[in-house]
Length: 464
Ligand code: SAM
Ligand code: SF4
Image (cartoon, rainbow, N blue to C red):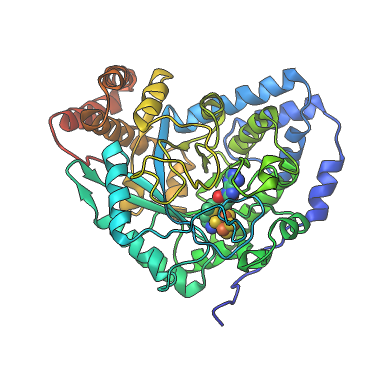
């Protein structure tokens, strides 16, 4: 009974293949799609397929320009930051791309004790983070999934002199309906799970043993999460396993399924590319690697297709790609990350899940993005005020949410600068905040400057 799927998600592979078989670049049609995209109401599968056919540099630049405009219109200069916390690398699955795969004897197995989870949390808090993404392999110590629940409690209960974690998102293997209800009771933010590849054949070739071999158990996880009342869910693809264009169209089918069944689609989409991992030959030579050029394209297309859905980029990518991706559509990034259990405390990257492209500290990343004119946001306001799922999208789609987001981004950035930033970051950050307040329309200027003044005077956790 506990293995009941509670749903069916069908990926129509033939329809996707048909759309991809027509490969000619129709300039007039593509320009129509780009004009439609600027209405910020999203695109359908035919539109997406048309954009994927872009070959010429001229149209590619028009695509990027349209994506930059959409990003700016909806998200302005805000950029949400978070840190992953890997609590365990125990895993019963054999995913051929991952260092934590059960067959890999080169990785020492470890599940953090609750004291160690608290220690890692304190270090992350003292970097200045407010949002954690909890990550684990698909096997738990003796207490089973209760272990992950205890970790969540520990993280929320850990306080440091300078702050606390205000939102925990989780990336955990698919759960049963009952287990999802347990997760919901823990007050998590977003439940994230990547299908890895939506192409069934490829899926079975890269997942050799363990529960993860079951494609349907994984693809229906979001249905169970939503039935359990978790209304912010995050989906994703591990790019490099199969044709990125197929994956994008399939991911949209998955999102449409959620919209049709639950009245709201996914809250975020993650776009990891395969990185080299110890004990994984496949990760050194991904079967269908996504070039940098295609990666930019896919981010831009995604931005235009689901304008109000967050796009998440991790430290797998190097700083240069991350900068470009921000302009094209990415709205959340991790920073200062470790992907090995205990990695923050031990200041090491040993036994990581995969190698990272960005090793900079949170302070360095913040300084860089502030120089670029982005406001680093540590905001957790929506989730704490119950603006989640459909309620969030109902505010986001008419463009109302950004009035909250802007103020909260300024408030949390000012709080970061007070306690956690180096003098160089403080200088560029405070200048940026003052400039942005000046640029606010009269109706919002007063509110923005009051909030920032309060934080600079010592108030904490000021949000609207
Ligand atoms: N174990 C759970 C699972 O597989 O769903 C959750 C955590 S898993 C550590 C998180 C994600 O890491 C996977 O979904 C996969 O997409 C990604 N990942 C695994 N190996 C990777 C690699 N070599 N490069 C980049 N991302 C990788
Ligand atoms: Fe285990 Fe997840 Fe890595 Fe697969 S991707 S081996 S399930 S940790």
